[in-house]
Amino acid sequence: TPISALIHAATMVAAGIYVVTRLEPVFAVGEPSLVVLGVMAAITILLGAFAATAQDDIKRVLAWSTVSPIGYMAAALAVGAPAVALFHLLTHAAFKALLFLGAGSVIHGVGTNSMSAMGGLRRRMPATFWCMTIGLGALVGLPPLAGFWSKDAILHEASEADAGWLPWLVYGVGVLTVVITAWYATRLWLRVFFGSPRSPGAVHAHEPPPAMAWPVLVLAVPSALLGLAAFLDGFGPLLAPFPADEGATEAVELVHIGVEALVPLAALALGALLVWVMWRRDPELDPAEALGPL
Image (cartoon, rainbow, N blue to C red; front, side, top):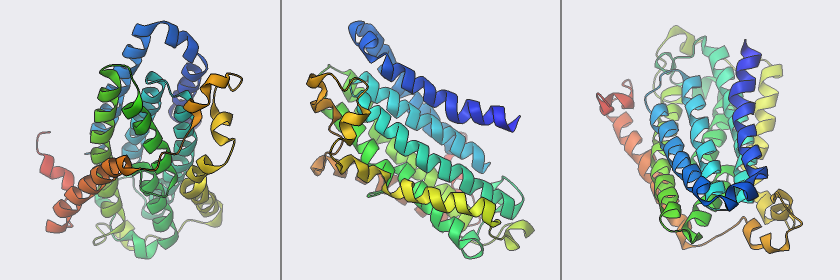
């Protein structure tokens, strides 16, 4: 049923991250377990991103885009940053809820899940367009939206961790996945909201009724601003799974503004630019067709 699917897709996977966070001391004393967790996280991050690149169903793109952030959370746990993992869990909850409900508004307006039958919706559904733009921006890590701060914190922790090759695997895969995420998120944005309508449903699309529209508008606020909570005193320690441990003070620092932030931003720009160039050649064609057999 839809309710059971929602529980499995939106709750149980996140609950798994929370359980591992609470059991972090157990994982820490068994050193191989962190290596296994980190490698599994790297595979999960890439798997989710690659699987999202060529989906035509808008909900399938977003479903696979949920897998990568969960991999990022597991990666944060593998490099010893449980508070950062929970920080990304919180921001992801906001912008992914926004994206799924926004996709529901689009599907309601057009009458199909297929992005091949959409196009040109930014003028017909302006409120949904701007809310989805905020959600997709947070997903790819566009500053100052919520996803930027939590994803940057994970990459920073990986670059600073002193645990051999594992943090560098996490960091390299994390940056590469920013490129892929920017690619498929921009593809969705262009295919759904720009170009010409590609079906009668897209021509006659309309905003959803207030009962559907208001939750999307409300969720746009934390999707844009929740990451700024990291600047508040006490927010980092609040996310620490074991706040009584005074030695964890360093681990709950969530904001790291520096030159290193330019690396994921450059990766974001590269991914978005690549798909935009493909799309501009012929807005009627799906940029994913350029991937060929891949």
